[in-house]
Length: 420
Image (cartoon, rainbow, N blue to C red; front, top):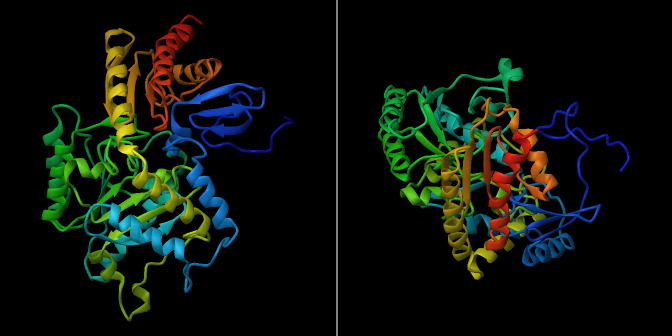
């Protein structure tokens, strides 16, 4: 390929090698222009659920494109969006009766924040605070950065960010500190919402916590009428072992954000689901009480058709059985790494598994991260460590042999890069 004019995401072009050209995707593999087949062990940044180019989803996209392309969604509607909204309401935890479409996970979080703050304002309540969890990540738009952990991801944009109240991550032995902090921040009824990634904090290091903690967090929020917002953009669509992570805690949020896997990872689409209470706070003869948000591609018909096909895959194929088998194998594989002194803190939740590599520097900018990524690619494996945290989040079509090859490669890659 000639020199690229593309500015790539999360890429320092001064030190990164040229991007690899993918000419075809198939199941759990990326086929490169040089003939190599790379095993996609992170679902192409957490989006591909069933595997690349699932036939039912591909067919739905093709059929939809022959009937509709982009359509204004203010004052107009279309059948795929109406059907999908009804499906999402039926699949989500109870009480989420309305669907606002977005085009990315970050945007769905922005919408959730606007819903929460707008509902309070429309009701005449002085609720202007947002409570979040330490180490969280909710996206890269300005509002989503504001409610995420402060650090290298957003340090340059600090002047744009608004302040939030942060509770500690509920690590082992710290669970009560987390609950007490939420109680403190919501007691004065100034918090409009508590926003949390259920069970697994993704970009923060694939940190996991127990469902019972999530249950208690929901109870505390409900006790002060603080809206409970679940960011299920990454954790939804089976990643944690259930369709939505909230199910494992018996939690029904007031607002739920979904994206990534909603289309099986085929095309961009996201949605923010809200309770009737949140919707009704915006429902008024006063036009100024409307939710003032839109995207040019809100409820794109082709994306909605892909999402409907994904729902049909869930309905007609043994997706949860595949997830259960993968989850069991993942847990067993990552626990085995605990016997290697180079690794620590093995953890798994559903199809997500992670382990820390003991290294001279830790955190997202740990020097071992890019070295491991390059070594994995040399072995035809797509793993993208979060600094010294190696995580595996495979598509549900991955076989036992393919998973074995991933976990064989992890210690071998660490050996290779630490000898350099």
